Image 1 (tube, helix red, strand yellow):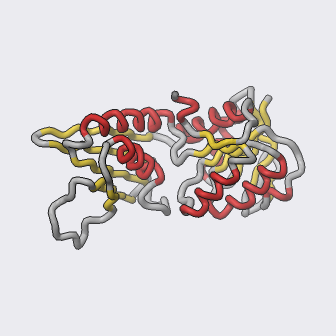
Image 2 (cartoon, one colour):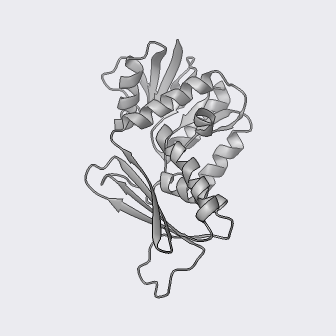
Length: 251
C-alpha cells in the first residue's frame, strides 16, 4: 500500500484527492499539510511539512505557490517524491523546482488531466503542419475563483504550439489598445473567468478560408485529482532525481 501525503488537504482539490484515495485499496493517506492546520479528518494535519516526521511514498500538492519552499525542503530532507499540481508559480519558482530536481524526484504539470496532455500532442502536430499558414489563438475559461490568468494550461498549450510551428513567436494577452493588423508571429491567449466553469481550453488555427479547432472541456475536478494520483503511483516506483511530467503517463 502506498502512503500518500496531501498538501493543501483542506482545499477543494485536496478533498477530492482524499475522496479518491479512500476508494483505492492501493493507497493510504497518512498525513496532510495545510496552513489552516487541523480539522476533523482521518489523518493528522500539519501546518508545515517540517512538523511531519513519518514516512510516505509521495506528496500530492494542490495548495499554493507560497507552499513551495517548505515542500522542496521536505523533499530534500526525506527524499520523498513530490507531485506538484499547483499553478501560478513565478519564473523564479519554476527555476527553483528545476534546481531541486537535480537532487530529488519531482513530477510537475500545470494540468494533471490525461486528456489535456493528449491535446498537447495534437497541438504540436497541428502547429508543425499549419504553423506557417495559420494564426494561432488560445481561449481558456475557468470559474470566478481562479486567481492566475492566463491559466497554466493555456501557457503549456502556447509553449507546445510555439515550439512546433517553426518560426519566431510572441504571446499577446490583450488586444485592447493595439491598433495594427495581427502579426504573423503572434499567438493570442485570452482568459475568461465566471461562474463555476471547471476548465475549458480551445485552440484555433485560423487560416485562409478554413479554421481548425481543438478543444478540451473538464466536467469535474476529479480528472485532475485522478491524474495526480496516477502520477503518485508512477513516482513511488521512481526515486531517481529528476523532473517528470505527464508525458511519462501518456507517452
